[in-house]
Amino acid sequence: MRGIALRPDFDALKVRAAARVSKNGPQTRRLLALAAIYEGASRSQAAEIGGVTLQIVRDWVVRFNAEGPNGLIDKASPGRTPILDAAQRAALAAVVESGPIPAVHGVVRWRIVDLCQWAHLEYGVSLSEHTMSRVLRAMNYRRLTARPRHHAQAEGAIDEFKKNSRRVWKRSPKRKTSTHAT
Image (cartoon, rainbow, N blue to C red):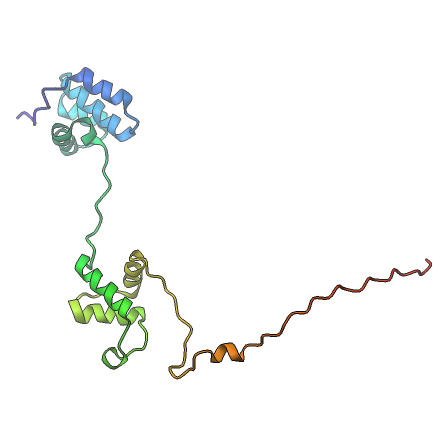
């Protein structure tokens, strides 16, 4: 049974030339294994050259046929999909910006645990406090606490309470040098 055919627009010389100019070690190893196939080596021999199994060589051939030599460069993993989508993050930002309503939310300021509970009640999403903290940090929110202020505090009361003494600068008196005999 014959494997998947390689691209006809390349040959062993072109693939080896691409391997020669490559700065990526794994890509070079893959290109050299495919060059051996172009020269008539079996897929098993190419797997030995690349230090992999036949299935991996097959995957390299598929990637090479689809994208050429650049298809053999390792790509970054896309990662896990976010727990909160863009609309849910926008709603979270709006809730954080508006602040809690004590009569409705039962708190006077948002804590991470309160926002986790809000996300669970609103969207049915369970988030740990650590995850919620990372989500908020990614949204450029920082964990700041405002200094508490009494609701009935009069404007300017603090300024009147502070001591505003005027600084008086005086030159220090000259020191007398001691004239003790030693």
